[in-house]
Length: 89
Image (cartoon, rainbow, N blue to C red; front, top):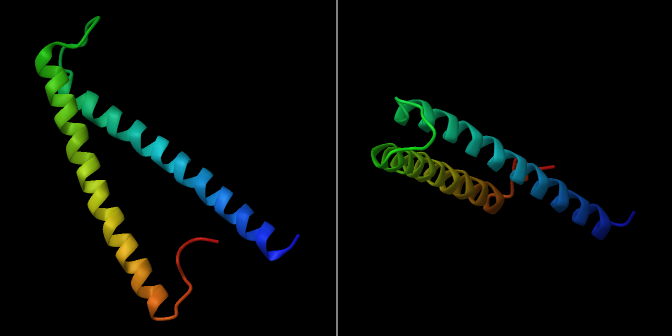
């Protein structure tokens, strides 16, 4: 295996890990928001439950975006300082 193959394999693994992480986070968000917003489970959600769930998920996703931006800025700063501890392989 040459360096290009190793680099491509690392990127593929990182992509798979990111996809798995996103899937897990979405499951947690869905579970938490459903528990918070759906107080009378039934065959379908009423309008207030739909609105509550959507707003709840938006808040979680906004918070995740801030965390992701902060992490990316830190990783960029470390890279610029010559550090190679990016948290990836």
